[in-house]
Image (tube, rainbow, N blue to C red):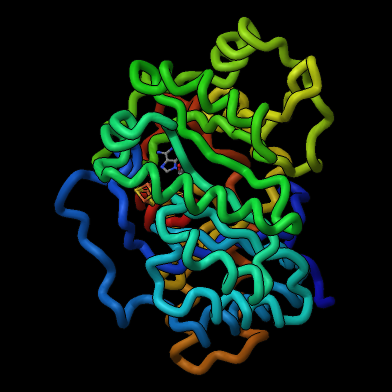
Length: 331
Ligand code: SAM
Ligand code: SF4
């Protein structure tokens, strides 16, 4: 392996999240507006060849954990084949995907056959009307079918279910979702809503904190803290005291985990972001298309990583919205 990508705070980077498309088949309220999203023109998206080449460069510098995300990754044509190519890149140890599950039931066999190793399925409510209210599409059955299809593959376990928690919206969904972790082989993860929505409607008051969620759930089923999954984990893990399952709380706003962050992000149009909340990006697509060699591209990435911000700084009163919404950055 060539030298690792280390930042000015001593953090070594091992994980790359790749947004393979900015498009989506849902319109979750905390992510996209109902109408009027403007999609990137096709020629601005990285091609499969370009993604595979960048993965190779990152993997040679110790970034071997890949997460495929978006937008909705499954709306990108040919995704299983792309995953197959990524999994064949030397140094890539682990490929995960975050999906809303709607197109997953039909794709899962192909994805696993091509090397998909882990999956997160985002489902915010188990009630069809509430799911529609949140996502603006009546697709709960398809999302649940996608989630259930993953159970056929023990290699994918534990399957993770992501649920964004919003005050005044999510309260009725919290116990049913927590209950899912007791009944099925799923780790249910509650994510604090972050200011990454395209309409820029986030408020601090909308954040239903991990602590509040633990209190709500703990009143019904006592919870016990667990050791972190790994030092760079994005969430804290808790098990039900009676032994019936595991929950995670991704409390990015109230309990930031920036100090141990080992993640980089590549947008669908080839911009490297060192933080979800970065206000600037580093263009890798231009050098890639201009014929730069791997070492030159690695040097551009290394400089960007060396300047990585200490943290997202949301506690700072001068904090402003990041340049681009979650669906373009890749959550
Ligand atoms: N479309 C896929 C999905 O929803 O799983 C992948 C992309 S989505 C941007 C990745 C994750 O980010 C999802 O779990 C989603 O719920 C979460 N997310 C989106 N907007 C968010 C926000 N404003 N705050 C916190 N999480 C958010
Ligand atoms: Fe689409 Fe995922 Fe955003 Fe929902 S959170 S609109 S599923 S990209």
